Every structure is written in C-alpha cells, then in structure tokens.
Amino acid sequence: MILLVTSLLLSFTSLWLGLPLLTCANSHTVTLSQRLTGSRPNIVLIMADDMGWGDLGANWPNTRDTPFLDYLASISIRLPDYHSGASVCSVSRAALLTGRLTPRTGVWTNFASTALGGLPVNETIISECLKSVGYATAIHGKWHLGHTPPFHPSYRGFDEYIGVPYSIDMGCTDNPGANYPPVNVCPKDPSLYFEQKHEHPDDLRKVIEADLTVGIPLYQCLTPRCLNDNCNKEIIEQPVNLSTLTQSYIDNDRRFIQRSVESKQPFFLYLPLSHMHVPHDYARQFKDTSVLPSVYGDTLRELDYHVNQTYQLLKDLGILNQTLLIFTSDNGPWSSKCDLAGNQGPFTGVWQASPLPSGGGGGGTAKFTTWEAGYRVPFIAHWPDMIKPNTVSNVIGSHLDIMPTIANLANFTLPSNRSFDGIDLSAVLFDGSDQGHEYLFHPDMLGILSAVRYNQYKAYYVTYPAIDGACGGKEGLIIPHKPPLIFDLSRDLAESTPIEVSQSVYDAIDQALQAKLKDIALTPHTKVDYRIGGLDARACCDAGHIVCRCID
Image (cartoon, rainbow, N blue to C red):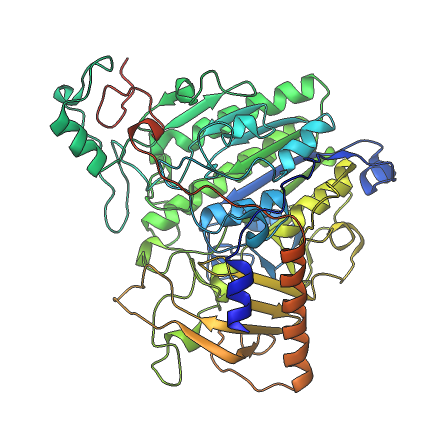
C-alpha cells in the first residue's frame, strides 16, 4: 500500500494541459445567505500561525491568555475536532484557499525566500471567486504562497495586500524578538551599501549568494497587480518592525472595512497573522500581561487583542449581523521551540515519543507531522442571529471546508473541471447538523497521504517525528506500518496505545484511501515550480544594501 501511495502521489504530472481554465461563477440556486438575509455576507477569516489547539482557553482551560477569544467562543460555535489541511505553513494555506489536498495543488512544502514559483495560477482560490461576484477583497498578513508575479497576492484576486510574504524567521530584523536559535540582527553599516547601477564586487557577490538572508519585508499594495515586474516597489518597510506589525494590521483593517461599508460593497478580509510563529515580539503594552508571564503568553495576549479589535470594529460599524467571522490556525505548534512554542493540549503523541520497539523512538509530535497536534487546530465561527451562541459541535471539520462553505454563502459555483476535498459546513454552523467528514486524509512532509482519519479512528501508514526535533534533543524513526497503526481517538487523544480493529475497519480505511488516490490520479492536478533563484529573486526594497534595507 505504501508503494501505491508513493507512486501515485509523487507523480505530479499535470493533467491541466488542454483544459480550459475555469473560474468561479454566480450560482443560480438559492443559498442560505440569500434565504436569511437577502444579500451576500461579509467574511472575515482570521488565521493564526503555529497556534496550538491548547492555546485557546475555550479548548484547554489551563490556558488563560485568550480572554477575548474565550468570550468569542461563548457567543459562537466551536469545533474542537477541526483540522488543518497540512501541518506546515505554505501547504496548509494552499489547502485552505483552494479546498484541495496537497497532491492536487502540488504544494507539498514551504516556499523559500527566493522562490521563483508559488501556488499555481490555475488553482482557483477563495479571493478570486469572491472578487468575481462583487466582493471587495484584502489580505493583511502572511501570504507564503509566492512573492513574485503572478503568484503575489495582488495577482490572486485581492484588491489590496499589506503584509509579509513568508514566515518572520526567514530573514533578519533590527529587533528580532525571541527564538531558538536566535534570528539574525540586520546590519545597518553604511559600508554595506553600494550603488545598484554597478556590478557587485565579486567578493561581495559571493558573500551575498552564500547567505541570501535579507530583512523581512512589509508590502503595501493598495491596488490589484503590483506596480513593477517584481513587486519590490510596494515594499514600505524592510526590515519590518515586529513590535508595531500588529497595530499596523489593525489600522489597515479599520481603513479597509470602513471603506467597504461606505461603498456598500460586501467584503472579504483575510487575516493570516504572523503570531504565534517565532520569533516572538510585540508592542510594549503587552509585556508581562500573561497570567504566568512569558514571552509566548505575552505574544498570545497581543493576538487576542487583535481579534478583539476586529470584532469591536464590526460591532461599532453595526455590521456584525451581516458578517461571518472565522478564527482558526494554519497548523499546530513547533515541537522544538520549548517555552516559545504553543500548547498541544491532550494531543501529545505518546506512542511516537515512547522508546523503541513499543513506540516511535522519540521526537516531536506537532508541526511537520501527521500526529494530532500537528493537524488539530482551533476553530470558532461567529455570526449573530445565524449561529447559536455557546455551541460546541463535535463534527470532524477541516480547512478544506472553508472554500465550499463560502461558495454557498456568497452564492458562487466552484469550478467544475476539478475535484474538491472539502464539504459545505453551512448546515453544521447554522442548522445544528452533525454531518461532518467521515474521512480525512493527511499529507505528510512529502505530500503523501500517509495518515487517514475515519470517524473516531486514526490510521497511520507511516509514523515519523517532527523534522526539527524536539526539546531535549529527542529523535525518532520513520516507520512504515502494514497494516496501518490505528488509534481510537474517542478514548485515546494522546495516541498512546495502538489498537486492533475488525477487518472491516481496515478494509474501509484502505478502500477510502485508494478511492481518493484514484480520483487524484484521474482528475486535474498541478505541478509546482520549487526552483530557488539568486539575488534577483529576493523581496528587496533597495538592492544596493546587502540585506535590502529601505534607505530613505
């Protein structure tokens, strides 16, 4: 079975050749939003970065540093069995925005800071669909799906983009904040500045090309499609100031939402925040505000504040009843960052951490893995008068469901020339349905579907630890399993003790996986350009400075 999985999923030969590029279209059916409000709702999608399931106090009472999010959960619906589309940044974002699994989009690992490619343009994303049916669209936050045209977000259905192009540890800053190991401080030495019109001296070029670390850039694109062929003219700050980044987003959130309300245009605001990714830095007003003062807790407080400010703005403008507000995280927390990492809650992956031969030999069990802590993330959805407050639904949900759910609410039809892997959660959110996913398929770090969720069961065809290790230097092994290793999550959230199940359960899981693989192989899927460029591929405010520092 492992060989079948590998052979099918590592062959990303495009099936798009010769097919027309279909886009989203207006639906002629009566949608839930039309039935209840007569118009398309505003949509605010907030996604934290590397936030643990247990970082949300509503999920895990030991956490007390998300007071507003806990309040929001009490007046909303919360899905504690909700999952990312992958356990690493670029891959999970591609899954959320397309509603399609890794083997379909071709996005199986992160894009580098000098990536030449990005999420393929024939993969239709939420913003493009919403734009096609009259929405104002904006992204304020981390993109990480390609920073040059045509992959830059200003080319992907967003009217404006304000944010960082990738993770905030993928370059230097002036005040790096807290990380293990520390992030580099950007040099300010004027001697490292040289005229762009001259050729770089050979010795300096070698230094730069040996270490392409540049300052983390902050883009401000206020129109669709950036102004030049590499979008560098839209960089307004490099390196970005991490301690003022959240307030910058809040100010721009207010400007965009107010403008949309004044123009009487429904809006989609996508807020993929940089918190809680390392390095951690925040406004000084949040220092020592966490219940048990810590850098991570203080950062979590600032994230909570940002969500609160967004909610209060919607309330002050009188548009809460016309707005679906969703909060989630891209994937689970780091295993290797110790006190700078998020809380895994009960999902500790005990079997992987246990010694051989009765376990996986150690290692991390969160981000980068298919263990529960890597995939299970917070989920809150709020829409007054539409969503019953203080509701907890135990259906199995996924990032893959965001696209089809929004399609229903905003009344557009998904492209018909491809398969989607999500389901419409409208009935769950608004009508109390208990019909979620029966199966979920989890891609591993090679993009292979090596773990399957089936009702209460979790099946592993391969187990492995986090690639970045874990606190204390623990390491483990990559172990294939035939038949798959199975845990009963209804009794064992820690995934500590594999169980024997009936042959019918093994057969159901295997048949569902083979059916999914067959559908992937026989329907359009894409191949991603993961080539890495040199100096010219950098997001660079001023190429005359060794780290591209913006020079006034």
